Length: 413
Image 1 (cartoon, rainbow, N blue to C red):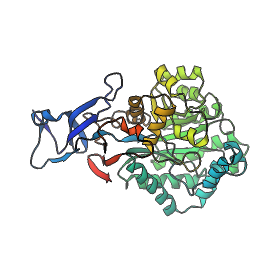
Image 2: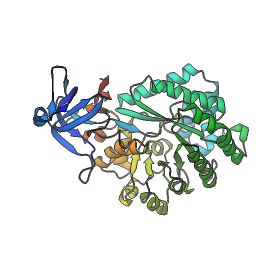
Image 3: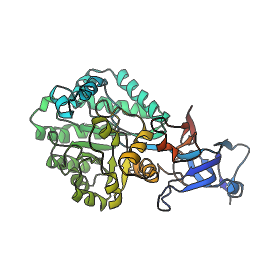
Image 4: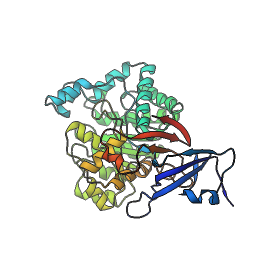
């Protein structure tokens, strides 16, 4: 029996299914077609086999890809898009020689964003988020994780998550909200990090759970922020409250955050610029995704994450932007893919898998997003190129032509 379809993308020069086959896992099909029904992929194959395999009727929408590349949409599994103001003054301080710790000591950093976000109107926060999601869409990103964490009090954190939920219902992308009340110790709890962890577990987390918007919690396990012991306590309690777990780990120092991720069953451990050799092996033997954020290393002039070592160890590695107002003001997943290839030891194929299927796994969406195979969401990008290697090669100027989410055209140049 032929497969029913309501939308066909035909005349694809190179279709990257990201099906996991072969050494690269990208599953390149030349002269291909892609059939969809109700926003889901139902068939992929050579265009000459389309009529044999699929039921194409007068009501089926048929679109030509013009011989260009088609890939899954990017899955950006680590962003901070809900904030009250940008921090370009701190960027200039850094350019003049100040480092992350100097800026924080001068009143900048995360707590600067906290002050401004607490004062920001709902409309400003909503408009900022929608603006940057629109820019991400123009760069081929169809699934986005969105963290709170610039409120650090009950009312602002809940407001930011409420806005994330409202925006998720409006924008074409899939938006996955994350509660990151453990982004920093707020001034109200200065010097009392343990008390703040108690406050989050006992007072804030239950309200976030009842609100029903955030799927994940996250914590910044770093020297001068939260210790591995505090991170373990918070994540373990959050898991018991029904949340899935993420962690900012081993960014500036090797604190053992990656081990905390593995031991608590976190879905992902993110940053890992300073991960130890021992914990590379530990994460490789686990189900935790190692999410690398090379844009942050570039922005802060830090050593790039050890992508090649993690890949060679057998770890599941994802790539994300870390879009935020302080340490990586970058909306572009194509640029992140380029950095992974040029600075972190990825092959082109490995980088594309990490920015799609593995990013989906880092959000618990590995059976739904990041691939173009039957049963998956029809989120895809048509590129103005006939060779997939152009994506990281064309540095800083992505050749995105058209973007579809759930089989619906949502962006075109």
